[in-house]
Length: 229
Image (cartoon, rainbow, N blue to C red; front, side):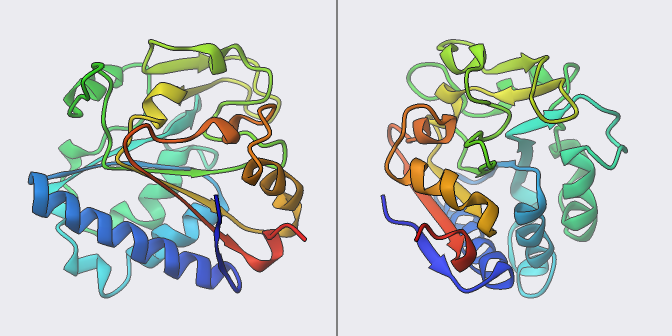
């Protein structure tokens, strides 16, 4: 697995937005809608801010997008720690996505995941899933050593002991991540260099190493600072 390497966070935001836009357009052209799961964190925020600008803010078929999240902190949706709140401020408030097609990842909204088209195994088949990786190699809210990594059937797992605050979270499971048509992992900064190096060589101890769509594409876009030396 060879990452796409760009110069800096601004170039990463540009490349990630372009990658996402291409797949949104493809999904709508081929299937009439796009089912997209967003991520939290600073690196995805840059991508979302770029998607909220020309040409993507009006060019993309946002009215045919259904928006979900790959994980969420169990905090109020207006809390600054909420992945939903971040994506709303960076992107969703600036593009014409219908409010009834936006589904924050909360306990109450779990039935909304049944609206995502299923694959042959009955799992949601997202057109696009956005992810990042942490310094410990976690992705979504799947942390090293977590029991949630062993989940083979559930779509979402609750995490009550995340090693980063807040400890209580909800996350899509590995089978759902790996059922996607396309997964984009965005990685920025020198603090992620060691984790990225281990994920690239598929160190099984790191959760991000287990993301590999069964019948889809996996792309890593990383900046120079995160690139393993």
